[in-house]
Length: 288
Ligand code: PAF
Image 1: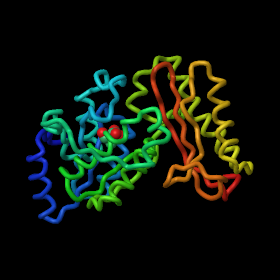
Image 2 (image 1 turned 90 degrees about the vertical axis):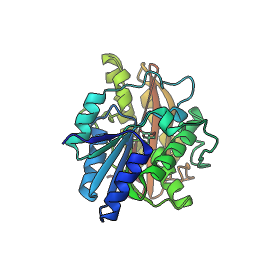
Image 3 (image 1 turned 90 degrees about the horizontal axis):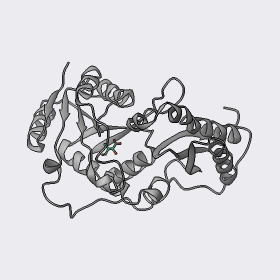
Image 4 (image 1 turned 30 degrees about the vertical axis):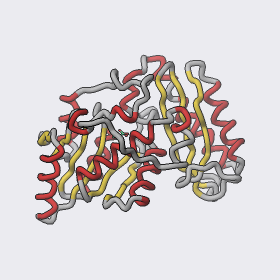
């Protein structure tokens, strides 16, 4: 079914208030559009768990640095309607910038420590922009279950922590990464890659696999795991490493030693396109 498009905060609030008063639960999938099956999987999870699913499409200027791709961020409104409609979304919230930010933003949300490393190191204002818009969207949508992809693992950790720290009445649900058949994690930014770069982008998955293998064969030193992952990227001429790391899943800190669950994180530049990926490993279960 084609979703109903809502463009104002007031209309979305009023619609969802009625739904909740009638006892229906709300599922929420925030996006920046150019929807692919990664988004589709979040929508399907929301539709399976809740009575009414709302998705938002808003390319949030606050989370882009002046040098980044805000102006050229890909968009395909017709396909977005189709993807949302075929994955169980009944309401699509598509506000314009003046609806979301009618005045210059003086109030922002920042989640210290979790935001400074990894993506935060090369994108210093990014996560404040994300936390601010997501808390705003949560205030607009109201109590709900909200679905985020593990693909943006640091973002998921930050939002989970923000909701807990600020007692926001939202249950954050993380959903597994959706990959193309050859292993590339789905991302709207994959659209920037030409055919050779698209092939080179498989290096992220290969580097993660190398990290998993190292830990499976008993490596417990995160520095050594980082080296193994970095070496895989160095062997791909079209790729430049930004970071690779084995971190604790909740704090995103590199442990002294990898024991128990860890998360492998990687960010790589392919040409000018920055791609990220990650996967879970268990340092206690070598050989998995
Ligand atoms: O992951 C995204 O697409 C964005 O960061 C989000 C969560 C929709 C906030 O703008």
